[in-house]
Image (cartoon, rainbow, N blue to C red):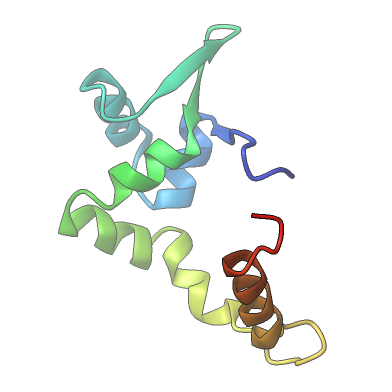
Length: 103
């Protein structure tokens, strides 16, 4: 998936992901706090705007972290070094982008 690919979620998917009710999501849509498009009569919500919206208040952050996707973050730590990213690769890429010989 390309970096510039727009991810869209349904109201029910967003509610499950962020640990809130569908009504809360619909209220945010009504207040224009979340960007969306309508596809075949259904809201498709922009994931980036959902993330920003989920960080607006402490209550929202707590719900996201305790009842939504945040409750699984601790389990995402990769213990097998074979599949974890090598930090040296990222440092090397940063150095290469800073010193471009073609400029």
